[in-house]
Image (cartoon, rainbow, N blue to C red; front, side):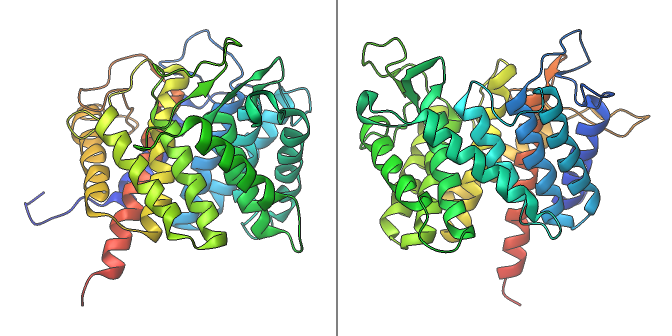
Length: 357
C-alpha cells in the first residue's frame, strides 16, 4: 500500500466477521467455541452470545446481507435452547444485553417479532431487579439483590430509552430510564466523569473504586446519548464526552486500551467502542475520533499482524492490541475486535460522506 492509499475498513470488517465464524464456530449446541484454539471449556456464556448477536447485526447494518440476520437469529435460538427454553437467567445485566440485541434485531424488516421478547426482558428486570437498597437501582443478580452496578443499570437505561421510541403512547420505559439515570449519576458517576463499577457488593455500602473498566464508561455514554434522543438536552452529550475523555485518560496507554485477561474482560473495550460510536454520530470530536483510529490501527497493524492463516485467510485478535496475539484467545476478545473494526468502518464512511466535493 502506498502512503496515499487508505485501508478498506469495510473489507477488513468482512474479514473480521469471517474470522469469528471460522475460528470460533462449532457444531450445535456450542455454536461458538469459547476460545481459539478450541479447548474443553463448553461453558454456556449467555452474555457473550448476546454480544455475538449485536456483532451480526453490525454486519447487516453495514452490508444489508441477510446472512448476518440469519446468524443473529440462529444465535438467539441457541441461547434460548441452551437456557432450558427461557429468556431469563440469574443475572440482570446478562438479560439486558440480550434485550438490547433483540431490540436492534427487531428493526430489520421481517424481524419485528423480536421486539416483544426485548420488552419482556426489560419488564422482568424492572419487576425483579429494582429495589430500594442503596436508594434504588437495578440489582446485578437475583441472588445478590443488594449489589447495584453500572453493568446492570446502564443497559436498563439504554433499552428503556429505545423501547420508549418503539411503543406508542405513554409507557413506563422513559420515566424509568430517567429515574435509573438519576440513580446511576448520583451513586456511580463522579464529577470528573469517572464511572465506577458498582456499590454495596459486600453489603457494606462501599463503592468498588479499584474496579475501573472501559465498558462502564461505554454504558454511561450510551445512556446519555439515548436520553438525549428524547429530551435533546445538550448537557447529556457534554457528560458523555467528559466520561469518554476520562476513560481515555485513566485507562488508555499508547492510544489503546490494554485490558487483558480474556474471559468477560475481553468484551469490555468492544462495548466502549460501540457506545462511543453512537456519541460521535451526534457530536463528532476530533480527539475521540483520533483515539478510535489509533486503537484500531494498532489492532490491525500489531495485534493481528502475521496472524493470517494462509489456508483459511482468517485472523484472530489478542487482548492487548499493542502486541501480537498469542494463543489461546477468548471468543469475547474476538468479538471486541469485530466491534471496533465495524466502528472504524462506520467512522471512515461518515468522513467520506461529509468530505467536501
